[in-house]
Image (cartoon, rainbow, N blue to C red; front, side, top):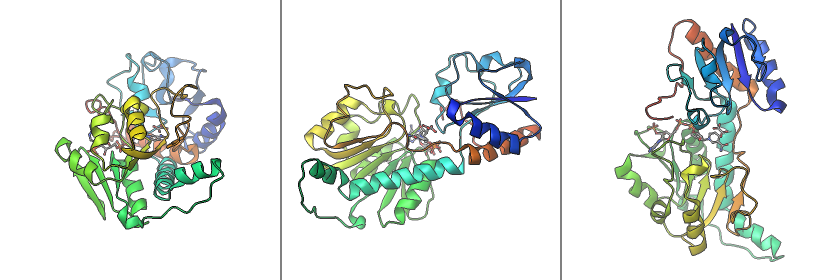
Length: 309
Ligand code: NDP
Ligand code: OXD
């Protein structure tokens, strides 16, 4: 029995060490050293080449190294009968909570204005709203969104979230479904996107959605770039409908050198680093699922291919 993993070269060593410790009975192979394809039962991958997974005839599960699985669905030959498991692991969750808290605090505490003042060598105090006047809304109140929401509550912000199904998170107002989207937007001063990329969420953050926010609201983009109509976002920033944005994901990555986002005075650009899977903590989640599969039990966090996440 073998497990193949495909990750960036720098982190390959960390993955191998963590697997060797926790999964001694399984032979580890680091892509592109595939060896005998029929021996591979598990694949742990990020952006595998199209057709690679289909070339493994005895695959029992595919583990995404990231929370998003759009990189797998992009493969037209993805074997549909094999369970796809998205990444849910403590390191990735903590990292995203930190990122969302950091971005919301930067927007709440006028850090974009202070950065611009620093560039201009300008010293001026900006009046500060208390947290209870800054309503934060998380679009995509799933695993990562829910944990971030709880942390934001701790700072005294009124927090709400929007998802397909209703959530019960103490102190967090849950809005669900298309019919509640406009009410959710109307009470949101900082919108945080943590949606997965699906046909329904692609291009969802457009001029119409942004115009549903109160004038001067701000935006944190940490889901996927293709959810955002970038021209509409720029227009909202130019007109003052949005007062600022912290952007971690883009339609094209790396962000092209000539993108207007780089020099926009109301924008902070980050190179898709909101959170990363930590091999040391992720391997435990993968091993737990392999053991479940070996016992004939259903794996945790299996992707629903109909829903696309
Ligand atoms: P989950 O599947 O736990 O959460 C997704 C949430 O989005 C769910 O609440 C779901 O609703 C909601 N949702 C999906 N489609 C719709 C829709 N059409 N309308 C309304 N709500 C919808 O995923 P995670 O929280 O683990 O991850 C979310 C995303 O974050 C990932 O898919 C990835 O794209 C992104 N990500 C980005 C990172 C970065 O570094 N920038 C790092 C990690 C993740 P419901 O609960 O009702 O099903
Ligand atoms: C993820 C990511 O989906 O890093 O985990 O974007």
